[in-house]
Image 1: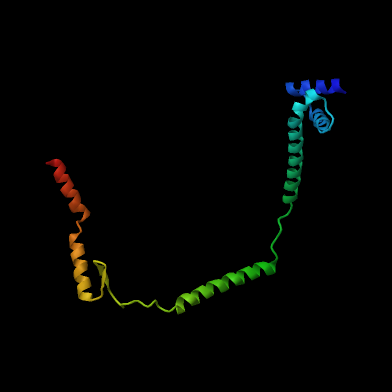
Image 2 (image 1 turned 30 degrees about the vertical axis):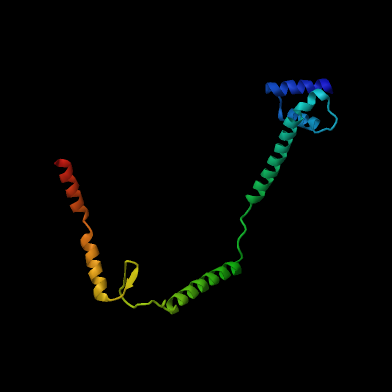
Length: 150
């Protein structure tokens, strides 16, 4: 038997073994009492055996999953639809009937130097002053081009 296994191993490492011969090697290395000189090869053949088992299980799962897909029962689909419609209606009702947030002022206000200004005339004056300080993009480009060309 030892000579036969050694020949199978030689063929295996030369890439000449068949699938059946490789199964025989995996079965042999699955045994408990192996010669000391072959023990370093145990992990290789046990890994291959585990991999073959995993592939067989994976193939079974694939075959089972290739069957007809399970359909959701009609009543469950109808229930999901009703629940979605109810949720949308509830959100709509809450948005429509939501009380307005109470704000300190109704209308325009501005923050100036950390203080809230609520007088509409003062707000407009501060807004105009702020907008007056803004340089348009075109003016800025012209200034930069004039600076470069000088």
